[in-house]
Amino acid sequence: MLAATQLGHSNTAALCVGGGTPPVTNNLNANNESWNGTNWTEVNDVNTARRSATGAGTPSAALFFGGVAANPEATTGRTELWNGTNWTEVNDMNRGPAQGNGLGGAGQGTSTATLGFGGNSPTKKETESWNGTNWSNENDMVIARPGTTGTGTQASALNFGGEPFLTSAQEWNGTGLVTTTVTTTSD
Image (tube, rainbow, N blue to C red; front, side, top):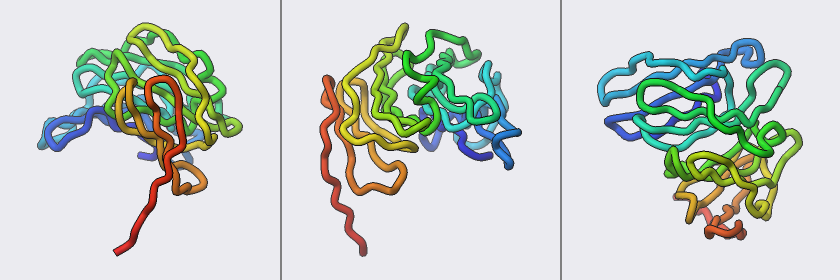
């Protein structure tokens, strides 16, 4: 499976949602697998098959948003909420259709409070916050880049990685993103 999204992962519980198999553009899936610490189990699928999406939350309460929903490269701001049993479509991202592919999220966010930032089509700087019901436009990122990842919460997050492989991270301080230099060392 390519470009699937992990949600609420630990060594005892996780969800793996969506993705695709080569060639990805023709083989998107809506699969949702649950990890119980020993085995993976197929559980109820998301409503819209897609890849390159992101998410936040736990295996019992998660949010899955953005991504590529159809061929050719049709990005989406679609947002779905997981209650531990089923996925429900909720309000889409405001700018999601333009930023859905390669979107980064605040990995420790919850199903009721998280961030979505960046994206492709072309490279985007947009940031949106989720309050459990709606997405709100926030201040743009300092550096536009696709394919990022993130960690933190809606109040304090770090956005890093992406294409090209940049050596900087952007810190979210609750009101905006500021560039923070990250120094890497090798052994």
